[in-house]
Image (cartoon, rainbow over all chains, first blue to last red; front, side, top):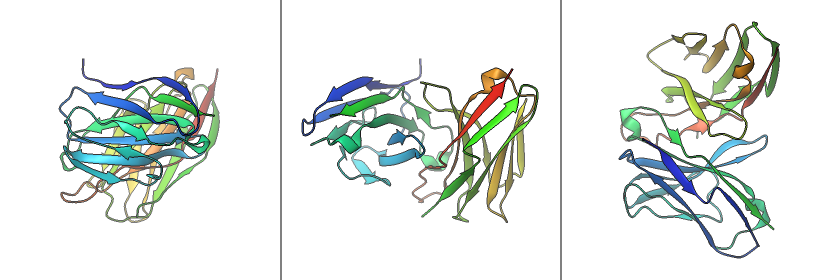
Length: 114
Length: 115
């Protein structure tokens, strides 16, 4: 089954404790992206990757890191989480953007930083 | 960069009525306009999209119209049903080869369909 998976789905952590949210897709998609969703603010892009070893900042990259060492995986790293990073996070993937086509979202990760 | 405005933020209709959600965009180079539906507690899912070489696209009860001159596009849902209740997001991007191509989302419209 074609899908985007994220882990964990729920996470409660404390300020400053490094964490990683994993994202994996099995559709051989070139493009992958991370979004955060906050009430009233819609979906805001954190980082994206056009292909392996190619990553770039989105609209709200501060406090986050990513890597794209393999085509299928695109982990989101919070080196020192803070309460303002409490949010719902979505990973998404698609074929190369110039090819068109749908962006598929993962199930989401709800993160709480206390 | 691109900016997408979406209105209204909330919309309540009676079952069977039509619902219209409108979005405007700022970057005239944008050429791809998808609409996503997000049910409570679930992930966004694409329901319809339109490219700039087309003015209107329809899929059963859902249609999208695009006015490139005015830089706005709209989602039309006819004969609404309670299962249409969700948050709807519009988005825009420039998918020309070599462009950044990222999706810029509107802030969403919460649609409630009352039985």
